Structures are given as structure tokens and as C-alpha cells.
Length: 106
Image 1 (cartoon, rainbow, N blue to C red):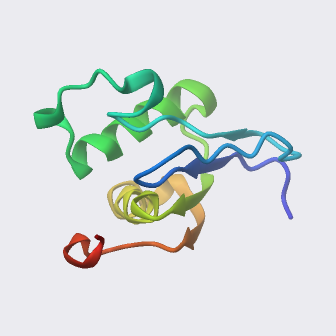
Image 2: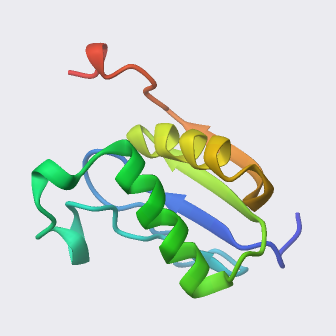
């Protein structure tokens, strides 16, 4: 395990996904509509907006260094879209219970 590569934990539809005991650099940002960003206007919250928000958040903490991403539920979909949009920025992805089609999510 490379403890120098930042790990980004992306939460799903409900809750947070922080792993405070992680031994290396890491971040568990709130997505738009959650936690510190819960006041975001619902009509501005799209998957593309989440990806851009994630990019800005990662940039502000780690610059443009490649990261490993762990995405839970819809966070897995955001992780995959982030990697598709910014392939040079992602070293690895772990998808935990990723839901890639919201038709069967509920």
C-alpha cells in the first residue's frame, strides 16, 4: 500500500464516508447537497456538478497529484465519472456497492 497517494472517500446517498483512522493523506468531502454544502440549490446538483465540485475540492487539498478514490453507492458513480473526465488524476478506484443506474436505486 502506498501511503503517500491521497485517498478520497466519496459518500453515497445517505451519510458520510470518513475514515479518520486512515494512516495516510485522505479526504472525505461533503458532496453538493450534503453537510457543509447542504444549502446548494437542488436544481444545480447534477452528476457533472458533483464531479466538478470534487475536482475543485481535491485540487484545494492535494493540487493536481493523482489520487486513489473509494466511492460508496452513488459515490461510486461519481468516482467513475471523475476518472472518465480526469483520467490523469486517478490512480485507482474502489467501488463499494456502486449504483450506476438510478432506475433501480429505490
